[in-house]
Every structure is written in structure tokens, then in C-alpha cells.
Image (tube, rainbow, N blue to C red; front, side, top):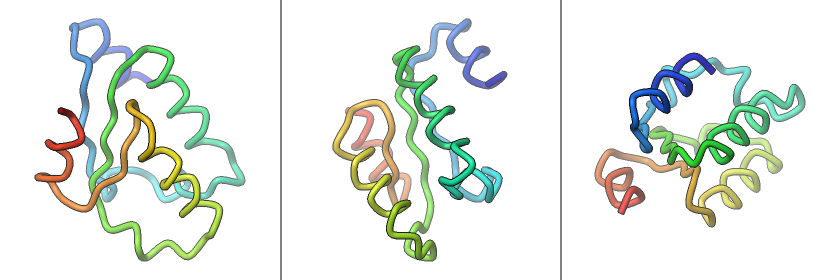
Length: 89
């Protein structure tokens, strides 16, 4: 949340984060961490792109979550930096 606050305060509206820099708990949807955090990004209208290999996650609910997020404009999960830059367009 500190990161989002700092970015928003400085006038940025896009952020790229590598999946490896996010705690594994984020990807366990049962604890609601991902939903709560991503809702904040959406509320503040800050576009978040998470870059990583999401094929290693086997949870159907997480795969569905990623799929639905990628349909929107505020949070995207992509495999590489070039996909991340395209998502920001």
C-alpha cells in the first residue's frame, strides 16, 4: 500500500512489478490479499502490470482471476516486458 500511495502522490498512473518480487501469499486467493490490493489500484486508477510466469500456479480460481483481470484496464498479468508495455498502451 505504501508503494501505491507513493506512486499516486508523485503523479504516476502506471506501475510494472515482477511476480518474483511479490510475496507468494498474494497468489493464494483464499487470504483475499490480491483482491484487496488490486481493488485499491483500480480505485486510484493506477494501471498495474505484473510480469511473470503464471503457468506454475495450478489453482483454477487463480487462473480465472488472472483471466478476468486481463480483460480489464487496470490490472494485467503478462509473461514479459514487451507484453507489459503493450498492456500500458
